[in-house]
Image (cartoon, rainbow, N blue to C red):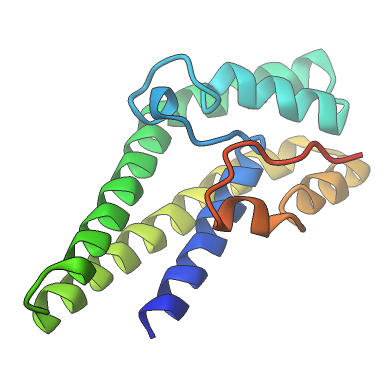
Amino acid sequence: MLRTIHQAGIRLVVAAALVFAQASMSPAAASGGPGPLSSEKMAGHLTRKLNLSDAQAQQVQQILDARQAQMTAQFQALKNARQALRQATVANPVDEGAIRNAAQALAQAEGDAALLHAQVHAQILPLLNADQQQKFAALGDGRHGHWAHGSHAPAESQ
């Protein structure tokens, strides 16, 4: 059951991360440093993948800049929740209540990440033409396994 919850959570996080420019989750990014989750890198990635005009790229950059602190905090919350669950599952003696509480906290963090993903997606989508919207939707498809097992460098598509 915990494995299923964990796998579902990973899929949500990966989908959010893919929309956030398929950036890898580095310690620098989680701490707010100039890592792969920087709004500049995300906007640049989306600009290339979606062939955004200068005006579109600027608008996407503004959206991502406005959400940068929130995204960084959310990824840190997910990291912390995962770590707490791992620690609870290896504790001796087994504390079922602690494991369930940690799993519930992770589920909450994953839900918060999914909501943030949806909000950012909803802000960007209206800026795109029909072709770009299709490409944007496709950014979240496939390659989930790369991150589900801890790889920090998803393969570049097309």
